[in-house]
Image (cartoon, rainbow, N blue to C red; front, side, top):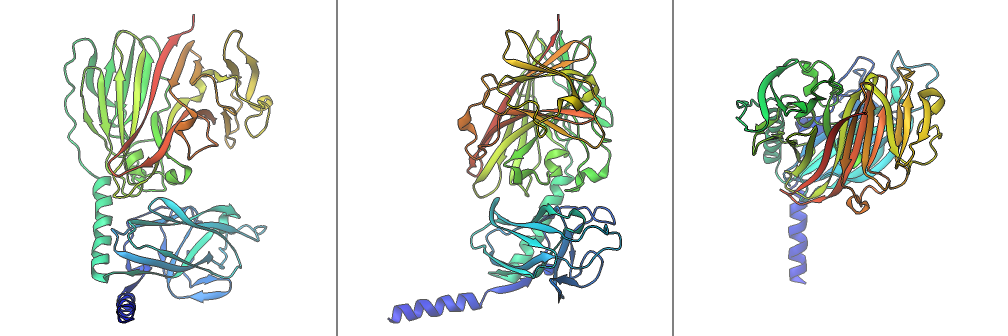
Length: 489
């Protein structure tokens, strides 16, 4: 009995000794810019987006954090927090420019701890604030997120009376400042790019490409490619010796907004995102557009390595190898867990192609319901959908009458017998992507098939989905694609 009383007293003492810190006193590790009537903005404290008192369900609040979807604020905790509590809802106040016919709105609130969604609920305009509380003992990161549901322009998110309970207030605040500085140091790190090495059978040279001073051109007697480590480690040029580049180039890389999470420039070339879906909303500019370091481990090979994304707990590595005497290269994408905790990580590989360079897309026969509007509408987009004789592919011939506001996906609907993406360019060149894939690679993404095309007026994405698995700290996951260019005879 004496032992039980002693344990109870110690527990009560430890709970009472916990420090409470309101959210407006804690520097965030990272936050996402969101849409607003006044343009892109960051979350604000102790007022709503109109500068007035926070208000949910007719009740006014003095303290909290407010924003708009896509709302995302991240705090790295280093195991120093005990819990987080708040009331959540949609702010009552209307904006003078809100549409008159928009009477309702709702937002999905997600609480993500160590990259796992631990709480998910929907809140609606006019509804009373909903209390949330999550245990943070031993946890390393929390993300407060508000995602799209209904009535987009009124999706104004409030976390009111929000606070952390922590072991020690002074230590917790010092750690918060350190994490914020670590993110900034990765965004603007300086890299000295080496001179190109001397190879015997292949050529490589350091070149200026568009606005980048430190690009590298690799070539053999059949083809050439250009990689740009200064902008997300991207491949931006791939072509036969006698042909033009077909890869979409993207927006001006000098745009300083590309270093702000939530203000993504439309990047070009080849890059990757993270899986599952929650991991790339929104992308981290350190991975997407930041400067990558460079090494040349062997002839024909270049490795580009990103900085550390302390938001995702991930580092990207691209290993690119040009083969001798053929128009072929291999791209191996590697994602490394740099976090101190285990979490799911997967690879989504994307190659953007200039829409006007494409004559036809080739899909495996396993595609289902090709006239289903949610996949594509052949009358609007395609002149012809036909099966290639003696082939495992369907041929989709484009007519390019694509309205600027429309988007399409064309995707596998059954697991294919062949893992290949094939594109016929207008200069009578085939661009072919092949990859190794098995169903067992993606136990966490059962609805995802290995590849699809995304189409819009300016570019077409040839996308493949690699494996997704739980990574222990320091471990990696990889995805290899072979790219080939062939003339159509």
